[in-house]
Image (cartoon, rainbow, N blue to C red; front, top):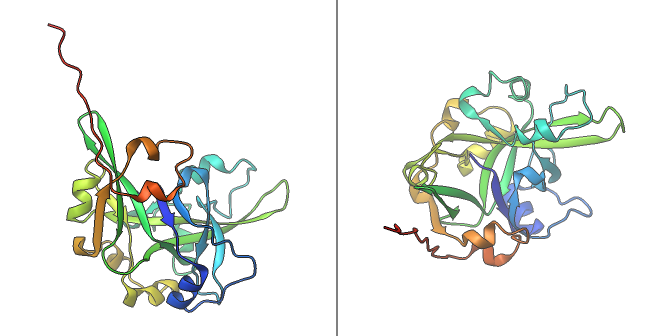
Length: 236
């Protein structure tokens, strides 16, 4: 799955890559580490002329309650294989596709009882185009409008199978030639079920103590690090 993400690009870089205008006051403060469970604001690409700020964790337009956090925590990701079956997502296909720009994401490898964090980034270039879908929800109490998104996931490639070795999933990362078709709702979902090849990714282990700290949104969280684990010996 994809629950931890990074976005350190400048607005001008996103504008040039996707051919979108930059709206006034669009925040470009670097995000070195963000957990989806904090529902962070992200710069999102749609078929509209401008980049758009949205919150991670899709709230369906039909949701009638004011407390959105429970449903948003369950819609951080959407499996591409079941996209047309889920009530939260199926009405958005060929209508509300988006791109979630990312400069890398985090995943954990299981070794025995230990979880080892890895940072995965593009092997070339600086930006991943993650496939996403979005929806617009109106808070029934305040009347406030919220635009939120989910990141699509697919079966892992060989590299991600080794890293994410329990669920063996990864985000759907669009090839450049598929980006516009996806935004226009013209891309066959079967194409998204095939993961980006491993040679398009690079990965390294990162500091487990730092990443689990509350103050983990710092540049150092991206740096290569070798974690050491000590097994307790027998007393007899």
